[in-house]
Amino acid sequence: MRWTALIVGAISIVLACALAVFSAGKLVDHVERHTERRLVTILNEAGESWATVRADGFQVVIGGLAADEATRFRTIQLINANVNSSRVYDKTSVSQPDGLQPPRFSLEILRNVERVSLIGLIPTSLGREYVLERVRKLNPDTQVTDMLEQADHPAPSGWQSSVDFALSRLEQLPRSKVSITPERVKVTAVSETPEAEKSLKRQLAKGKPEDLNLVLNISAPRPVISPFQFRLKVNNGQGVLDACSADNNFSRTKITRALFRVKLSNDVACNVGLGVPTTDWADAVIMAVDAMAELKSGTITFTDSDISLIAADSVSQETFDNVVGKLENSLPKLFSLQSVLTPKPLIDGQTGEVILPDFTATKSPEGLVQMRGRLPDELRKTTVSAYAASLFGNDNIHNQTRIVEGLPDGWTVRSMAGLEALSYMHNGSVVILPDTIEIKGKSAKKDISSIISRILATRIGPNVNFVSDVAYDENLIQQNTEVGLSDADCEKQIKAVLGARKINFAPSSSSIEEASLGVIDTIAEILIECPNARFEIAGHTDSQGGEESNQTLSQGRADAVLAALLQRRIRTTKMTSKGYGEVSPIADNSTEEGRAQNRRIEFSLIKETSDDG
Image 1 (cartoon, rainbow, N blue to C red):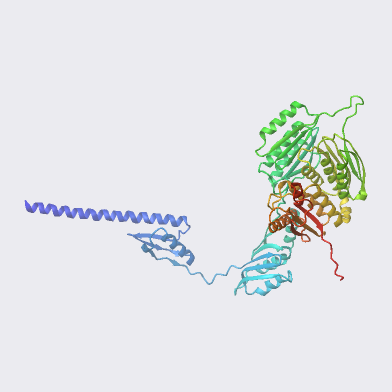
Image 2 (image 1 turned 120 degrees about the vertical axis):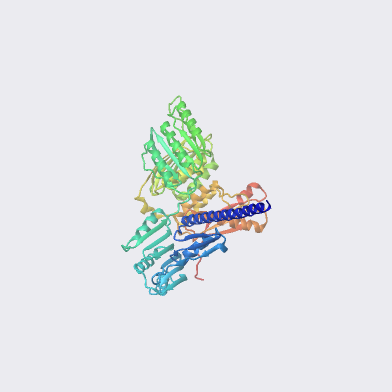
């Protein structure tokens, strides 16, 4: 009995050991298969299907023939990232290509006017000096940074023609990047205007070798538009577009399509630029166009996010309320709408005449200006006369205005704005009425409608209702180019502008207030007429604060005005900016009114100095 128990126990132990060995083997097989499947999946997803994987217990054997050493190394690194590297046995090999592979030749030229950088690998047969000599011919002062490397290998087909073509075009690309390969030349550059962009592309493509792939990435920066404007006048269902801005070409297309609903009598000229007050600009303009189509008569003006709608006196009160109510409720956020229904004109009960006070100014083709009509008092009459003299010259002014009390508020400002608009015309007239400004004439400026809209919007505000019938006459361009403005006339006009409107800054800052950007625009338009004039832009402060800090602040403000003119594409190479601090007051610093006058920007002609003595 005892021996039987021992035998049964021994058999049980043997069977248990056999079962354990069998189970362990099955477990190892499962681990190996799982490891192989996982690593094969990882290699396939990485695009390295050339490699084979075999799991031997906890060891992983990698085999296969790699195209090159970089591929083999990349694959082993991928395996090591998923399996402990001590378990990886590398049995891969690299195929041996027939002979040496030719190098990949390329040349990149970075040019910033007089500075040129050369980067790349070129064949020795071309020669570094060949490239350097061609680049140095651009300008005697050209500074060349040479980072070229050479390889003693035959130049590939097309290399010489690509390099010669690119170097021949480099003179037309003062700020650019030119990338050259045997089969392609890629040019990346910036042009000043869209018109210059098209012209540059034509010049660069001229004479291109047939087998060369020329890639041109020429862009023209969008100008800054300030303020963003849109002005549409509709009379009996037919529209006239005086000003239009858009933030991109897609927005311009949307606005253009909407304007067909008011049967425009003039061409659609919508300027694309930066400075849009909100991304919903185009949607708001389209809603306004639909509103004007319903009113059939009136004017709507956008100045950034401020909207002014003036309905004609022929529109009924019911129609006005319905259209304005619908527009107010549908406009995107940030837009503010002010609407006015023009009242019926007053009529004298005895004579039947319409009672309308007016101020009228006319300008002849010879530049003679005659002013008639009404002004509120003697002081304002003198102010208007002085302003007209600064615009047109004292000898060209004939003042026949008279003093009448009880004129509407803002009459003098409107009269001066009308005179400023008249100064941009070759000949014409301006009539100031209580509810309307009528402007007629001819001009050599293609964007005269936009200029007039901007002047009236910045001088009077978006609620002004005006009728503009100013025609662009291209025959006047040559005449105006020859005559232009003298430097002294430019100085007089700028002083007149600054006398009527100051350039204001944020407190203790050199940041120009948004409300003063219109003043900068007006000065820029004057400076266009005298591009060779040399001006000093002077900054002045009041006496509050330390003398040194006032000097720094005044210099910063003068610099800010110079920078703002540069943004408006005014040539500033002959201009200087200087801060005078508090040393040149023009009023009493002990009063707030005096301090406000002392905080100012002035433009002064720089007199040419004589070298005789």
